[in-house]
Amino acid sequence: MTSNTKTAIIFGLAVFGVVIDRLAKALVLHGVSLNTFFPVISFRLHLNPYLAFSLPLPSFISAVTIALIIIVMILLMLRAIKKNQSIVALVFFIVILGACSNLYDRLIYGGVIDYCNVFNINVFNLADVMILCGIIGLASMKFNDT
Image (cartoon, rainbow, N blue to C red):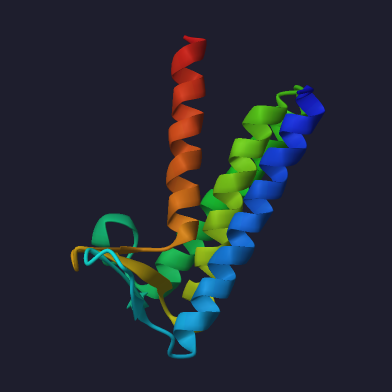
């Protein structure tokens, strides 16, 4: 598999991920909820007004902070593109897409729309997973460079 093919696949998966996240959010906003065949996972609306780790910040401050982080991530992605680091750029792209999806929720609905409830303890969405996987990917790439 060529490098361009891998890049196209990762790009496509990132876009597909954010489309699925937005569709899932639209479903729960319209009242769809379900318990899966696993008793530990359910699909239902939870509006999360907090930042990561339930940090309470006023919505304006959290939105501005997230927007600034997204801008920095875009600049880092552009730098990676300029250096022909396509995989690094794509991982930044995954984080940016996830963060933009959650920022959109925060601006429009006053909080992030979470829908995947695990053990009635942790509620998250696919955008959160994209952000987490991207950050882990970036950290592992950085760790492997040193």
